[in-house]
Length: 267
Image (cartoon, rainbow, N blue to C red; front, side, top):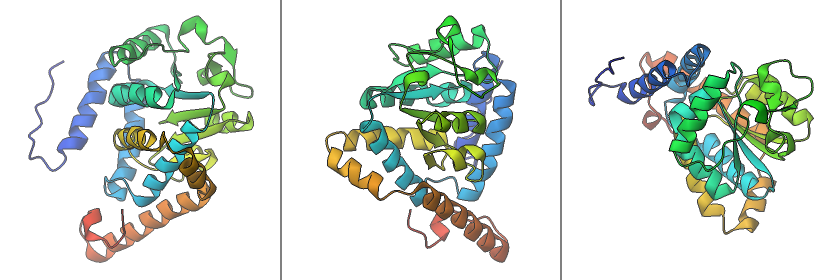
């Protein structure tokens, strides 16, 4: 496959680079065909949000960092899109938060598991759980291949970070008494609505910010408790939805594309 050269001055250069990265890893066997479709759906919401990390997203990132730092058994669940786009950041987050990394796939195959494991190890991961026979445990009331989890990882975790997740497993994990941190550009999805903390942002922006925020809060557990005490996920999601509504209204009034710099919101 020949990579497309993207002119740096192209107005959609960054978006195109992300797409090309996903296509590249699709051909390598890391990303599933449905992963390309899922990315396009999320990208539509990113347009509406202005392709920037919003204030509600930053609030959720702080709450997510505080949660990761005040837990004993955190696990970062990784699928193909996540591995393709932010493998290095996932490894950095696992290190700073002392979390485990586990591969978990809806379209599961041993070949994909191995490729994702190899990609994460290349990015510096010392251990990747959930590959092949290691995923010997089951999540109750879940019928998809995502039900297969590692008994050393997601099964016993008290907090699970699920970037680019589907709603069924988020709901099932919450029913098991686990806190779920989701990264989802669609605040209306079941994943976003069911999660304990929802970061409404693009994973390529949210993950580096989560790494940075976790590092800053690591030495201030009192601040972590304060953040969690003042965070309400439903209220924060409502702010994201309100932001979308207001931006679409302004777009309809002006009849042109709006960037966040055009608006009065503080981000």
